Image: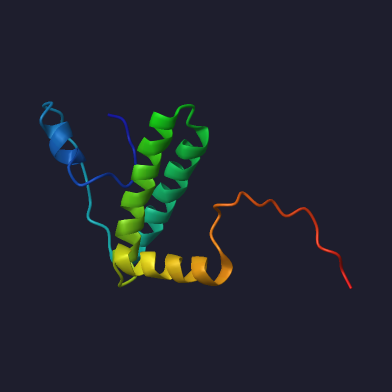
Amino acid sequence: MPTYHKLVRDRIPEIIQSTGKELKTEILNDARYIEELKKKLTEEVTEYQEATSDEEALEELADVLELMHALAKQHGATIDEVEKIRKDKAEKRGAFNEKIYLIEVEDD
């Protein structure tokens, strides 16, 4: 029996069981859940970086967004609150729309 030891989407156990396979799961406490969400976020960002088409990239970005929703909730906020923080930062410091790449800054 393959061993995975990873966080999965809520319906994955149901999908596996529908194929007639047995599985073992556990429900994580909050601290472990955040730890596993962070691992999953790293995994999905890596998959985004390795995507070779726009379609693949968008699929991986959707996974990243799903994880952002879960993480925001675990930190006592909503994705709308995260979006407000993003907008405030963009207003104060700018976004990444102009594709500016900083090369160097002269030291005094």
